[in-house]
Length: 174
Image (cartoon, rainbow, N blue to C red):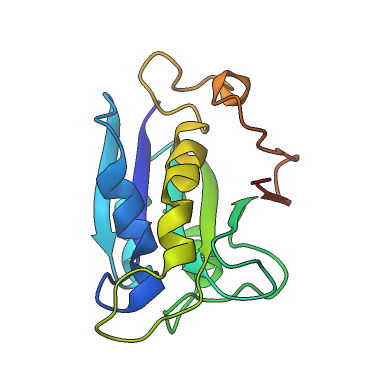
């Protein structure tokens, strides 16, 4: 089993930097490749090629509460969540990967609802506050070496994380 965690976003554009911030906050994960920063969703195809599991962390926009962590197993967060600060979204990169035969075995997108994508700004207060929950959500995918390939979701933090079947979204209760 191979796994990769990818931080999608630009830290120089406000809340779009949450993906790289989450990857930077992760502990070392033996057997897991961490890709700290990809700014262009097209580069996702190269980053996840050959992985059994790819976890992409990105900022999302849409009908979500500021700082809300949203999980989607599939291509992208639902409900018109959109592109964070990118011209192309993760769903388009996933479709391209499928066409090229370069998709991961399983794709999980963890989005954090952003509010300020202004150039030259850091993370907003709600997104900064969501950083620990986003890190826990990544770890809940079972990425530590003794859990790779197993469903370790029940072994995560005592806080409730509502998991749904593949292909639907979850919202973490805070």
